[in-house]
Length: 282
Image 1 (cartoon, rainbow, N blue to C red):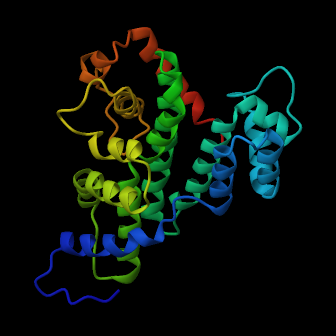
Image 2 (cartoon, rainbow, N blue to C red; image 1 turned 45 degrees about the horizontal axis):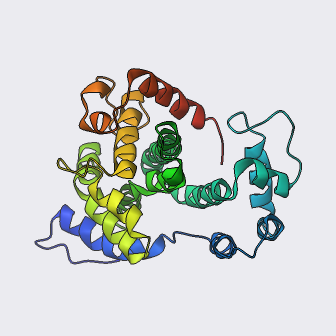
């Protein structure tokens, strides 16, 4: 993209690139769409779902590895896709498939951008698994799988913006992006850009809502899904899995923690879950 930069600010350049860059981030791979269709049809069995996964050798290997990982493993070793589905559950398999498909977008040949993307990926995955666990732990198992995807996508605007920075750096050698500028833009623009992107992708409103409101000062404290993602987002910052780490955070003082009536023991367990979850590769 070649632009006449007369009387145009760096912020204007970022915004212009963001419009075109959003088209380059497909949300779901073909196999995820096929699997979702199979899951939606009650006539399909576990064998039908396993057949979809088996078409993709890398995915099949990933499911077996995940089912046998310390995070999910039972007493006996899983040897077939069907057994993996039985252990993990269909929704968990789907969530892991979507997460695995997203991981490829969090890599870059640009060393500067690659560093940010690596931290952002760990934050997204930790928030996904942490939100899923927290909702189950506090009595909302029926929306725990939604918690995974909501956590995975809550900062999708930052992914888009980092891709924008990557493109700007590749196409404009005369433009220098400081760390302060990158972090400021990520902080100020990611909610709006993320919501626009999710809407363009036609992602269900429940996830768009989390993206749009996960940093609002005023929020719906009765929305357990939003509260869970906001809480885990903060725990990730406290434990260092964030682009804005803050080890001084006092979780007990946060309104999200009060809204969910979380006790110290649950918060301590959540920190452990987040740390352990990142040891599970996708």
